[in-house]
Image (tube, rainbow, N blue to C red; front, side, top):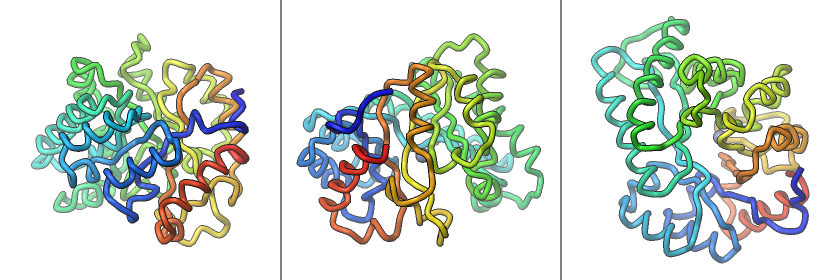
Length: 287
Ligand code: ZN
């Protein structure tokens, strides 16, 4: 397992962590000030400054990407399926332009919540089938663009409104079904916030192996969690055994960035330099 205690060479910042503090240019400048070498930007942040400007900002700062957030939200009724497909193709094109190593996929929950305007449904089984079918379709376009797809399983609390792929096992089942040859085109993004509670997580990380482990996201689980979406903790402030999970992915050969992704009303209220300084300290001491 790599020693993170001496530097933050392998820290990547998911830019949602400081999304309220400024635009993507502002965030990139702050990363440069703090010697942060990689980011994972969100599509809305890229769109708000324009793709060309985002590409230039990343390049001029010498930043790498650890991913691109996000594609997916596949569940919708038939009338919207083409719209969803095309939007995901644009996400792939943007990821290529930005030089991302993969695009993170959040599956979508029940159609009416993932795509407002879609018909109401209680059929989570059907939603899951739709997700697999849509990833199969997206994989064709992504493979031509040489952009790997990283399915991020989300905590079951999000099954209705964000992702009906809720465990590492379920995400890997989709990978095995759609990419049995393990071509590297399809894998998982494992976020400790979503997987820490799962009794199957360690054997599933072993099952994934290096070629399916495309991204590793860290934050912490606060007790109590006041807001399931926007009360993530800074690493070390909660109950997740982050180091065991990092040890498990690295034992399989994962050698990429440890990406800090904290959606938190509390941290969004702090100055960006304080947040990044704390991220660096905790990356060294708690990741
Ligand atoms: Zn994540």
